Length: 335
Image (cartoon, rainbow, N blue to C red):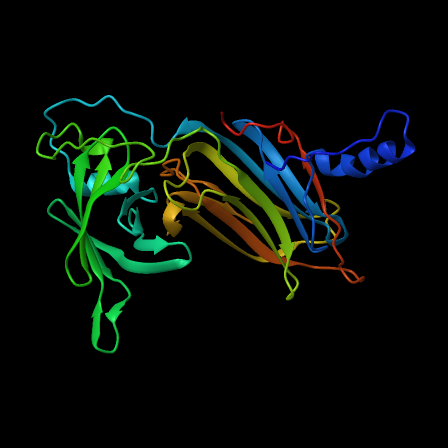
């Protein structure tokens, strides 16, 4: 959130009144527009809402409807003595990310996505998820080790261990550009064949504390080609990823309601965290709307609808407006 501190002159001063009047539109939660062909809204609403942003002169409206709330990383009651399949764990954790630090580098693994090491602006992709082999997650085809002298592609073996919180520990590089690390997760705690490790929230190898707050952005943009792109996405696209579980969602790109304009050739996409695309059974599409499907598991990080909207003259210059039929202008996202 942006905090604005105004230095106001003594009461009765006309200058102070003018300053407050100038600041008022900034202090009230509204759509934020810099480019006249972009309208965006920072969603800080409740766990259930319907938010819209519009380009009125383009007669295009983007609407995000959702129900969410329970944290994705909620603790589960587990039954001791169970035998757990790693493939099932990978499916349940798909799209979630965890991180840990080892020396100079911080490491981040996104399940069924990629693994990277980074420090400041320096970032290296160590591997992409390939397969499960026994109880190990295999990540292959990372960046070349040291071309041209050593063109071998980096690779990582990730083992699993029981812990109350997600995180990464026991990170090592036993041979050049070959890495091993252990992913901590409560998902395997019911199976005694997995080791148990203690995580330290906020410390090396442990997840950062979860304050229960997560911002999302709803945006509609007119591209140079004339295509209108409607997106809703989490601002938490790194580290632990989204902490929310969606019961339902829909994103709809609409032309004006009088029928003179239509959305032509719509394209749609949706991803969980870690840039993992949702499968065709996890989403449902109709005209220019994408929504949750029968196999949707609650994990969402990015959703998009795009299409051409016919016009009947004018330069299509966009003016942005936003509205909420719920409580989007009020603070506290799923606290």
